[in-house]
Length: 228
Image 1: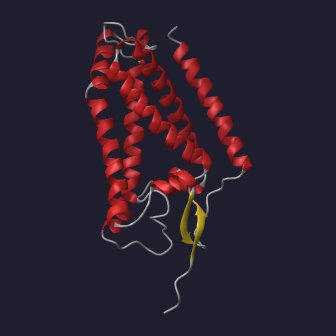
Image 2: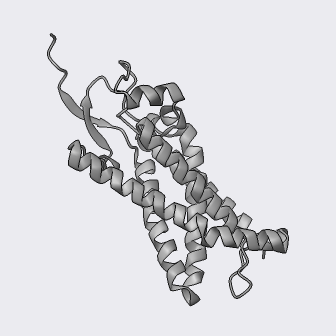
Image 3: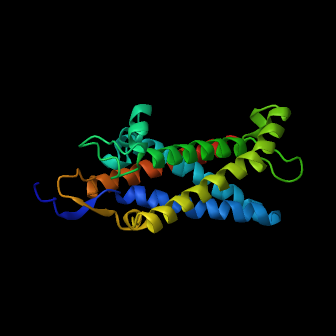
């Protein structure tokens, strides 16, 4: 049997992806807390919502041009691949545990989708008291009320459930498999065999991310101001 390849630090998560991850986490916390406080804090709830909007727009674009493990192509799996992964029958060269594994990818995609729905419903929401989404004038009153109901009930609880599931998965991998999922998302590197493809994370890539983030911020500002 040939000796196992030594493990070396391999860049998996580029800086823009890591910045997105931690900014999104902080923004979700701020959004939930401000909503629970209510009153004057709702101004910040809307601001956090706009930031989530911009972050999601950036992540959508970065999913096509970012580092290889941040691209959707690397973590949108066919059902057959998911089944093989669950059975422990991954094929050589698939690298299913380098970035988002098939189970983790479902969590990521669900979170992005639900947050997008939360942003959309928040933009057109109207609680008929003091809080009005900036685009609510473009929809009917019934639509605005339905959006508000979803945003404050099912949408909120699904986001919280997905966050708790994410945290539980991190604890499970650390406790049962001795795999730290937090450190790579903070530092960018994972100990892997040298033949593992590394994500591009150089100056040009980061400059592109900055340009995209700026464009996303400008687009969100324009959309929000449509209701002004």
